[in-house]
Length: 478
Image (cartoon, rainbow, N blue to C red):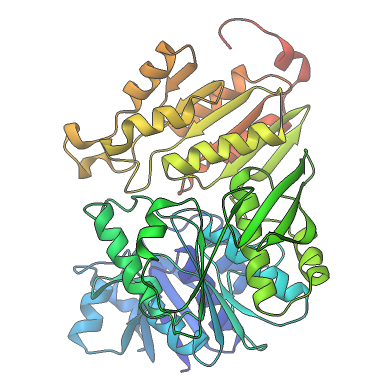
């Protein structure tokens, strides 16, 4: 292949694979409806031309292969041109399976939550131990610099998403990833746009587990009921992992958690393995790190090599990502897109910054949180914050009012429960609102699986330029 064209190149995984191919000397180009940071900057730095908007003229000269993203549907002018001219095309997961995974030992990290961080941890542990892994991660790991890289050391690590592959292939993406070692961090109902109910998600995971070879290994969260259901009849070796008292196999005992790092001990079958430090916070991240430890030991790494990787892990952009610290005010950008993830993020912020006032700014954007099915759960998830601001529902026209999440009702419920809560539809107005009320010592965490109207960057800039005297002026409602 000399030229590969990506339709939907602005997606995190699409841009990462495009960049990996470009670094191999292949000419790469693409398009998307909208391009926004961080992926727009990532593509620009990689020297990859990307059109904003779709037009069949972009497919001249004719590329050797067109990769069609899973957010792209029939009616797209570029897709119609590909089909009408019978150009060679495939999905991104198919490309990854054939071109990047085949020939390597495949480690696939799946589950509703924690996939990105766990996959990044495994990849970095291997990289820091000089094992030259390849990886595909649905985010930008700060240590690794890229979301995707081909393997030269015989191991490829993939974040395995259960979302569907493409409009022409409705299987879950992870069905293309040929797992030798698979991790399930837990299973909940998600992706309401393609899965009608939890049982449909469980069926997809059952199909994934059916392709793990008998010589393979499955690692599952011990206390997760749904994972236990789908993993009951697997033919490969199965091991569980969990916090103290949860698992007979891999167990993490939290020893210390402060503002700099978490220290935890690991036991295997009741026997002490080692004590590890990792600069992550919250119980959910201890579980992510434990899964990475189990994978590392399975792959033959020493505990010293694993400790070096954990201790030097810098995290992933937009996963508990501190984007500003000024005059005692901290701004955190996070990807939380599900009630459980929202709850875990706020709990982790509380752990890292005890006794500080916490603002939770949430944009209902995912295909799950924009629907009313999780209205009650979102309210419960936000209760642990001191101040809450709910943004507008992304693309509300997709649902009738009775099926659509109501941010105004969420704010009303939280106010009735004694919280300071507001529904502010415009991101700029939200930034103004928070900036006028924030005080020294506050932690502001923004949660969205989109760009949130660039609110994180704008609020960070406002915080850096604030006058500390004005911030400390406690007047009016907090």
